[in-house]
Amino acid sequence: MREKGYKPLDVWLDNIKAMLELGVDLGDGWMEELQKHAYPDDTRWFISHMQMFYLALCTPPSQDDEFLLTEGAFGVHEGPASLQTHPDTGEPAERYTEYHVFAVISPKSMLGSGETVQQLNVRQHKNTLGTNSVLADLPITKARISYSKIADGRLALLDGEGGTRRAYHKFCFRFFLISTEYVNKINGPGILLEAASHKLLQVHPEYVRMTCLNELEQAAREMGSHTAAVTLGQGVEGHLPGEPSESMKLYMKLGGSTGTYSKDPDQADKMLRLRVKIDVWSQDVAEHIGGEIHASLRNLFC
Image (cartoon, rainbow, N blue to C red; front, side, top):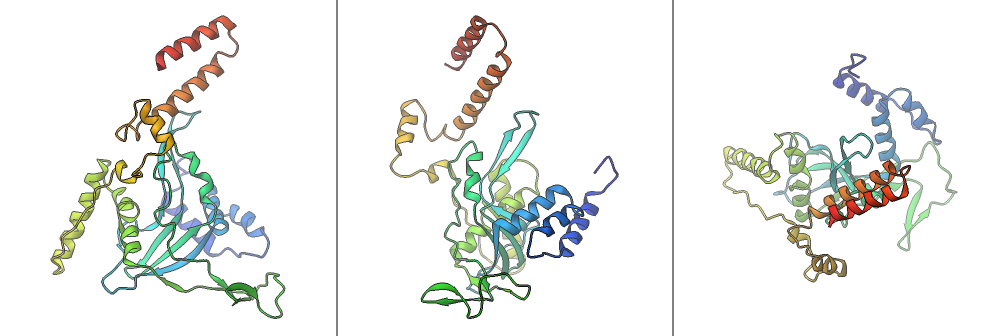
């Protein structure tokens, strides 16, 4: 974009225009058509959301509950993210898994999309501790389709429908009332407040979250509220089961602990990558030299 003099805002607006004007046909021609008019990365993102997610509308049932309208409350995902080093370029690369994606419409309404197959790419993260969705049991479901009905608790086709997609078929969306527990989880440090923290300087995460909460508390007081912000401790220990698993027992027998668990997977990944690179670099050297290299590597690791 820089080489051709394009401004990011112009590209963003042009992408939105292409997606809004796109005619989605019953086949797959719309995907090829979109690739002609939108930025490639955004095209792939749009296609993945059209094919791998389902849309739901959420609202809190209580008059006292609201969704936070942070600056970055649009397109926020719920799921693990990790920063890794690209094996070829050596540049940092972010890997993330989108279990749910949220966009706040108003304090009382939110667009939410649920994943269908995202569990498959969880293994891309070096540390899989805490990679499960905190909203796995969020009470939302796929939209109803206009040519279906519920019969004996099961989805069935209407009389005269054979299952063939028609241009006049429609999706039927409804608002899902989600409890205060889920509203707090969505508003919390792992989702909306996390997205808000990315707008601030890169400092300690706990400081960023406290800054967001303090500003929110101050804004509430200016509006006449006397409610104080309450925070709960977030740490690795809080995600561990009461009884260590067999793999955790083995890890602790080797000298590991809850204090080192968040660091060791990253170190192990670096050691493995170094071993792979050395194997590639030394594949053409004499056998005795390769043996000396591997022995030196073992001594370095141990």
